[in-house]
Every structure is written in structure tokens, then in C-alpha cells.
Length: 118
Image 1 (cartoon, rainbow, N blue to C red):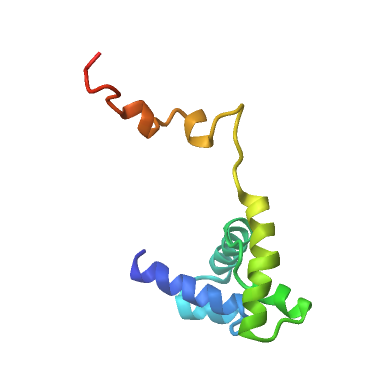
Image 2 (cartoon, rainbow, N blue to C red; image 1 turned 30 degrees about the vertical axis):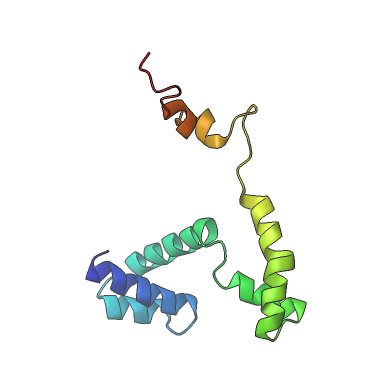
């Protein structure tokens, strides 16, 4: 990322944490309000689609009453990560692993077998 892009991400992140208003962010980035609004919408869309954990994990732990490191580790191991893995693990397609289904070669496909060339 360029320095300019990093600055934009930082400023839009501050908008996300309600430290800045969009109008203040526009002034800081020397962009119009409309342009910053577009950046903000894109940031929200990316956060929804790709920001799996972000501050949602912290909010979930607060709702569950987790207030210590030990409690957080226990919650992660016993509840959050198993649920997360169930949700995002890619299963087998037609009896093949995802890599095999996509045509990737496995190590056994590449081995020489008996050491002779066929």
C-alpha cells in the first residue's frame, strides 16, 4: 500500500471508531465529503465481507461475561474457534479435497513411484 492509501485507511478507521466525523475526515484527506462517503461505504463493505473477527469478537466476549485472559482463552478454545471453523471450513467436493477438485496435483501424483520413468 502506498503512504496515501495507508493514511486513508487510518483516517477512515478513526471514523469507524467514531473519533472523527466524515466531514472532518474529508478535510484531513483533502477530499470532498462525497468522496470520503464513498471510501466509508467501501470500508464498511470490506469490513462486513472480510473482517471476520475485528471488534465483533470483543463484543461477543463482553456479552458472554468474559473479563479475564484466562476466560478469553477458554471461550476461544471451547466456543468461538470451533463455531468459526465449522462456518468457514471448506469441505470435500464429490469425495475429493478442495485442492484435488480444483485440479491441484498431490505429492503422490508427483512421486516417481518405483524410480523408473514411464
